[in-house]
Image (cartoon, rainbow, N blue to C red):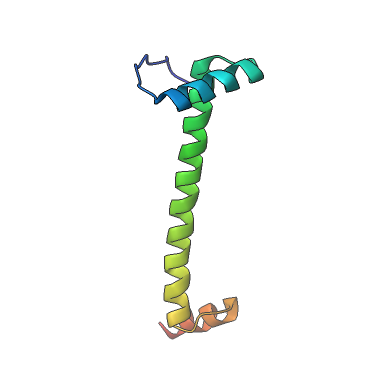
Length: 79
């Protein structure tokens, strides 16, 4: 990991309190708690993008009647 970048952020009081409580309970710094939350949000966003892409291509395959691997083999051989 590269050198840390210092940023100033604003949080609503309830989120700030939650983050501070989590930091105390888990014995982490507030910075580590925010980093964990951002990493989780990024992972969830990427997973959602992957599922959307997968859903798009699955729908296109169904439109062409490609439901099994054998269907795909037949389709590709026709080309």
